[in-house]
Length: 219
Image (cartoon, rainbow, N blue to C red; front, side, top):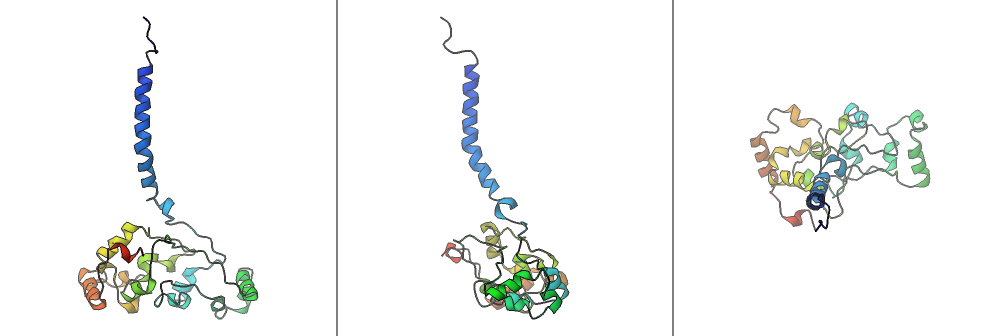
């Protein structure tokens, strides 16, 4: 009696089973790996702003304190963005009449805020309070990087749950005096800035706790 199926069907059946198992296991694993890449989380992504605001000029050359523009960073959950009027007082009339200053003039005329694009965005289910981090001695560059070296600000930190928890479990290495919160390159200026003893001293002085319970960030 001749075979009901060709001889190669067994090989096809085995290959099909292997492919099904590979798909069932491989696709979820691939997706889990993908969401952890810098492409998926937006790390290092270049965000186009309505105005070519160069932090190298403002934060480095002119040494304008971060809180001049982000005025609510030490009193509220959100750091805040500057009102349009804050962009006017420091610039010459020639620059105010330039093409680059067009969005600023339009904002003043229409009384509508400049549509700045968020760079460091967290999911809606994550609660983050800038003021408490500033009060506990976490510097701006700890999360935002050396913005004084950026022509266009990009997100340098992954801002993932694992990244945040690593600091919450051991906050001491990321602490600095409150007077140096906005100082860029502070750790490089002080040889003992990142030492364990300095961090522990500041943690004790500022009452820093290791908060790793879910309700700290998810409320």
